[in-house]
Image 1 (tube, rainbow, N blue to C red):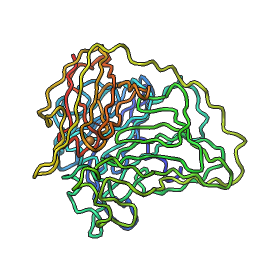
Image 2: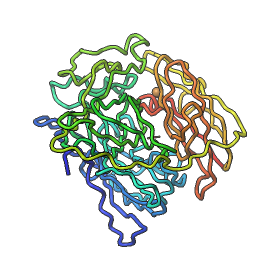
Image 3: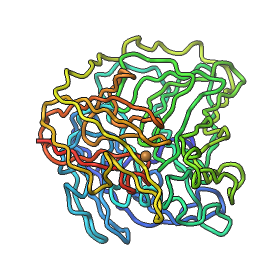
Amino acid sequence: MERHTSAATARDDNPDPNVVEISLRAAPTELEYVPGRRTQAWAYNGAVPGPMIRAKVGDEIVVHFSNGLPEATTIHWHGLRVPASMDGTAMMQDPVQPGSTFDYRFTALDAGTFWYHPHMHSDVQVDKGLYGTIVVDDPSAPAVPAVVDEMVVLDDVHLDGPSSGSPMGMGRMSMGQDGDFVLVNGARANVEISVRAGEMRRWRIVNTANARFFRLALSGGTMLRIGGDAGLLAQPEPVSEMLLVNGQRADVLVYVNQPKTTAVLQALPYDRGMGSMGGMGRMGGMGSMGGMGRMGTISSEIIDLVRMVANGDPIARPGILPERLRTVSAAAQAVRARSFRLGARMSPSGWTFSINGSVWPNVPLVESSLGDTETWQVVNETGMDHPFHLHGFFFWVRGRQEWMDTVNVPASATVELQPYFDARPGAAGSWMYHCHILEHAEGGMMGEVRVR
Ligand code: C2O
Ligand code: CU
């Protein structure tokens, strides 16, 4: 396996082919993301990303979790329709204290690409390296002519040490900072792989960064998007570029067009709006290290993430990709409409973030009923983008004609989404919705929907 392929798959300790039973331990560890630069990280089973959990639709997943961290934690299964009691928020479970254990148990209901991460103190815990991926396969899905099916997990980090560009804590107090180095599967970008021209690879791209948006393009190659947060799309769509915000996933097929050329997966510049808020935003350059880093929120340079170098003979032609991948139906008629106004305010103690004028945990409870579809108007009253995420249920995004669990709400824009509160076993309970820039969530932009 090449270096950029995903972290090892978690060891399945259960011989039953329909049960995936694994052990995860969160603990401090020392890593060298950049050779010669040791960094204190927190990791699942010692690796960043943590082990990939691979299952098929209908499997039972059992995770024996133990907490070796110096503080309490939980695990949230981002995008999976788990029972509310397994969702990993402090509303639904007692936090797992240092030295304690908890067993998570749920059924994989949907095929697709998902991920897991803590849901306590998440701006710090996820940033320190606690995240891993989950792939659920559907054996009846149409075959995709890819030679490999691999993860491309995107993150960024601040490194320890005196030469670090980031005064500790700067990111925490502010509005969500991009790290100094961009990581691809836990290794410093830009990683190189050798391929043959025309050879299709399936990349499941996940943005696990706290705050950095990835506006992705494949220069010199072809990229087709075949899936998103909620699994396969109805049909493949060619992409020249796509924005992957925090928490989102993209399932793509990529290939190099011409022999003896190189295609590069790049992150293009993107301004998620903090610069325009004045003050805190634009600090690019200050102590930043060698190009990769940005202290501010405007990623103004192109960052090469993965280079696909095509050597040898081309493959005769890319395999046949089905024209239709599956049937996707739109949301049902909504029975209720609500609106959520996203706000931000600078105070002497730093930024606070709000929903309908209130700061979590004082955001008024939303109550919904199992089986209902609702319309949520998310109105961004701030000058920066907010990736809006709902736990436990997918929503239909009208503008995109797609089911998602995380959608960007651009600065000063409104996005209409339609959550479907499906009445599966265990779905009754409390679920969170929040901005997935984790500093914003922890800074108050978070709410609870109680479904019964
Ligand atoms: Cu990945 Cu509450 O989020
Ligand atoms: Cu936000």
